Image 1 (cartoon, rainbow, N blue to C red):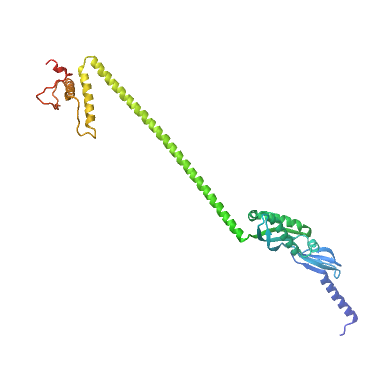
Image 2: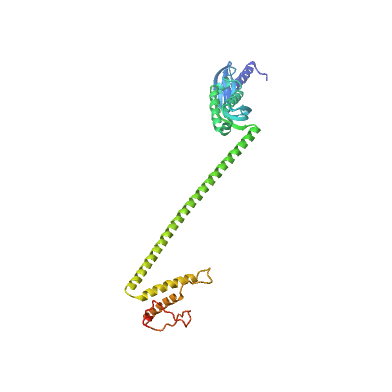
Amino acid sequence: MPLAGLDIVVIAFVVLVIVVLFAGIKTVPQGYRYTVERFGRYTKTMEPGLNIIIPFIDRIGAKMNVMEQVLDVPTQEVITRDNASCSADAVAFYQILNAAEAAYQVSDLQSAILNLTMTNIRSVMGSMDLDELLSNRDTINDKLLRVVDEAVGPWGIKVTRVEIKDIQPPKDLVEAMARQMKAEREKRAQVLEAEGSRNAQILRAEGAKQSAILQAEGQREAAFRDAEARERLAEAEAKATKMVSEAIAAGDVQAINYFVAQKYTEAMAAIGTAPNSKIVLMPMEASSLIGSLGGIGAIAREVFGNQEPTTRVRPSTPATTPVRNPFDTTQRGS
């Protein structure tokens, strides 16, 4: 059955409506923002989801990724403040906050951020010494983040992090730094060893001092006790002498006989016990010692009641020569 002219018009109208609907309905995925341009002029930004635009009048301008993105900064040469050359590379993280500004305020967004980051790396690292550069990466990262984020602010972009990945000084400089570190550690070890030796000497000196003090105190105590012993001995000797003197003064001749005999006996014992004396020459009369022994015998007879002692002391003089004791009172009457 041939179609009438009205039917053709209806079918064409339906097809046109479908095409218009497809041209006016746009779907934006999550994490993206689409800009809308009307006759080449920016009008609005479409959010994720289903959006409607005027077909054939409005069109999508730029599709901007608003998720956080990573930008790798290539290795570049940097000259520090102390004229040391080193190479450094970094990584930057950024996020688009305003899709319209990021699309229409700058051309080639990633290239702009990359060049801006590289320029500021040279500026920040070039204002520092090499030692400071190698030991203060956190400071470098903070400075780079602040400078780069401030520079990309008009583009509707937020730089979240800038991290220095690696800093490589020249090989000869690394070797020099290694030698310097070794010398510093050796110096520190020598200082510690010297301090230990000094402390040991101080402790030994303190110990010697305490030992000398204790030894001196011991010698003083020994001398004091020796003097005290001699004083007691002298007092005892003086007391004995006084008693003998009093006995002599009272007319007791036996006391002086005992005293003299005791002194003779002590002298003979001292001579006999000398280690270097094998033959003893006595320039004294043996009869004196014998007489003193006789006086001791008289005292013993008085004590024991004229009993005959079990042991007799016989003089070494010949039997034909009688010996008279001048201090023996028993022989005066004969």
